[in-house]
Length: 97
Image (tube, rainbow, N blue to C red; front, side, top):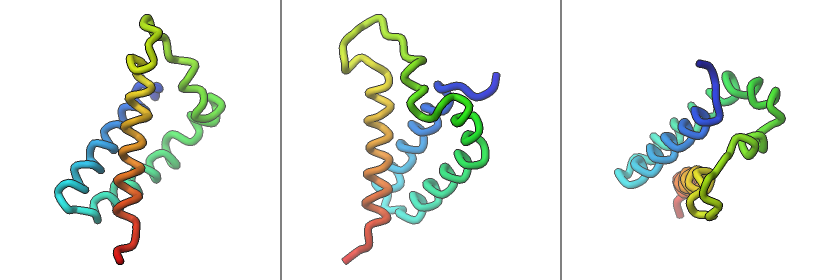
């Protein structure tokens, strides 16, 4: 039923998992392709939706947690996965010496 924050976060989580698998399987070119495709998809499909909601910070408004513990928050898991995606992309894009 359209774009939702859950779908956007899931997209990044899947991309992060794929990037980690690519690095583990020594396929750095695939990480480049993954980053390019995800960026293009966000630019073409999600940019307008994101702008209408005030940007990425709007994701914080949809978080409702019955457990106030920091580590039980789904957003923490999402951000950690996104961090792993960035880390994998960084190491792949880093020029070899």
